Image 1 (tube, one colour):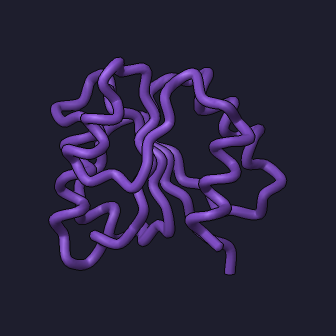
Image 2 (cartoon, rainbow, N blue to C red; image 1 turned 135 degrees about the vertical axis):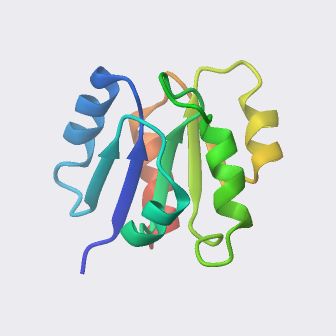
Length: 120
């Protein structure tokens, strides 16, 4: 069974890029352009979450969602990679408990390397 990746990203161009990047990897991808409730994420049962910090039109930021995920007993061990252009991304990632962070624009090979590492 293929590993499931949840990608929360509001930029259509980045979503299209990620679809191309992950096309031949064998991973099962779910995309969301808005925030998701923890209950829904539990139902999706992803093996990894890649999330933007800023999610336009959403009441919560990616870092707030990450904090909620890491506080939830059922899904706290799901790795979260924060991707963002925020200047203080390292501090944001540390504060919310993200497993790693990648500043935008991110290097595609670095993203794939880290995804493979978390999912192996």
